[in-house]
Length: 401
Image 1 (cartoon, rainbow, N blue to C red):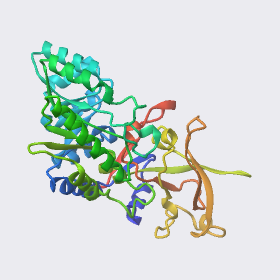
Image 2 (cartoon, rainbow, N blue to C red; image 1 turned 90 degrees about the vertical axis):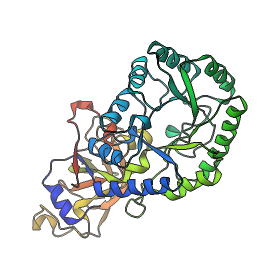
Image 3 (tube, rainbow, N blue to C red; image 1 turned 90 degrees about the horizontal axis):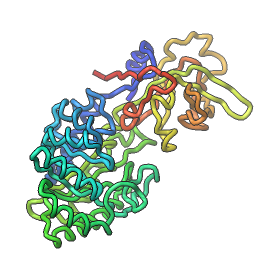
């Protein structure tokens, strides 16, 4: 991702910032589009992963729909040109204000997560003399085999409707004249790299659609959710997610009946690898037991490692073997410093919190104040989760174009 010319460009910029490789983003989107189109599948981009305006414009240009989890995401999707007929609205806690705005926008579908929510949407739609399309989000109790903080499909999770509630769902749907049942929805978690998990999900989807049809409901849409993971350890080797293998699992194991549509909600796999957080070393603290690199980026710019204990590859761009030592004097680079020297550092941020640590005991070239660092695979749940804690400046974005 980073050649010498690009690193030289970074040297002139104020850090920290998110760097977006727009060419790589388009390659990823094209791979996803080609793989999904092969089977006639419909993909909605999960807006929560990244709603940078240039990123949204690129995604919309490929004809993807939008998967939204707030009223403002619905507004942003439509403002950026996403077809309102391809906008779905999920979330366990939709407010009346958000529901009303989505009704006014005539979105494709609400993914509903409780019986009470069905009643609320029906009442609000009735007040507007509208009929709302709804899909029932079912908790399939399938273990995603991922971090427990990003698992969403078990009985212990807050999301979705459990199997023992389905009779109440069916009864409520029959009573609600302002709801149009269109299908069933699932989402079992995020950063799933074991495709065998999706085979288990297909089995549950097949069972659930049979249940609804046995109870007199026509299932037009099978929404499988998303969660396809990316390679955080080797971003330069496995740059684009395995969209081919992912969609093929559903082609092979999902029982798709004539006239049915299969929908997906992918976020991370579409945007994660196209961006990195670029930062500078402020201070090097050498101790008896630990060496610390204090960056000018912290948990306010990228919170995933602190919130999920997530791994993201950390690189010293100033010490890349192919890169010149930009901005360093000969005396500073002489003597004990070599490209082959390796040291272990705790890479931390400047925030007044002990948890503000990107990674411990990272093996890196000997590093110095002013060195440029990149934290890779930061395009998903990076910039969107940035905060103003400690009254920090808002992190900026830089683009390849």
